[in-house]
Amino acid sequence: MNNTNKTFRKLIPNLFLLLTLWLMACSTDPEPIAFGEDHCSYCKMKIADPRFGGELVSSKGKVYKFDAMECLLPYLNESKEDEFAHILGIAYDDPGKLIAVENLNFAISENYPSPMGAHLAGFRDQPTDGSKSLNWQALQDQLSEFKPSNFRE
Image 1 (cartoon, rainbow, N blue to C red):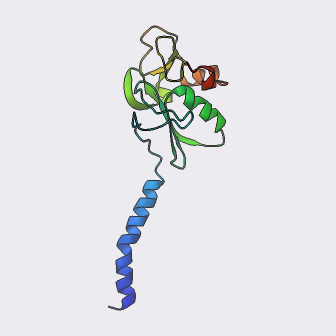
Image 2: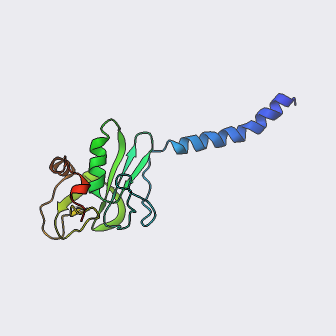
Image 3: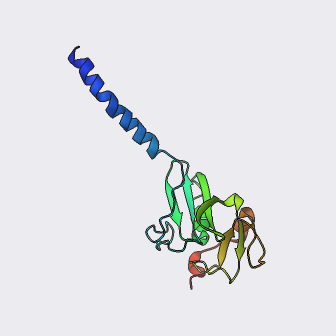
């Protein structure tokens, strides 16, 4: 066996490893939020309450985590040029789990003290306090000009 073949055989596992790592880096899979550790991509606060939050995953695989939907919405509005593979929220009635926003019902009520003070919560089912339920599109329409700094308590 000549030296070229030996060198090539040694490179194959390394090339395979590099290809695997490259493919993993391009993943558009959501990442779980590490409550108490991760910080909001919009307001930079630590994400602490598992009843609130959200996540955007770009079509290139970049993950943006949020402590509240009222941070995700303006970030999304300000990033119109980006395409997102996933837009996810956390359900107040199913804490800690990221769910596609199209599958959530949203409510704005004093009964849901969200981190940024808009009293906004998402639900798998209907809001537990009888508040008016908004789907994702209605929530976007209602909060199209929302800025968290206007609601911070």
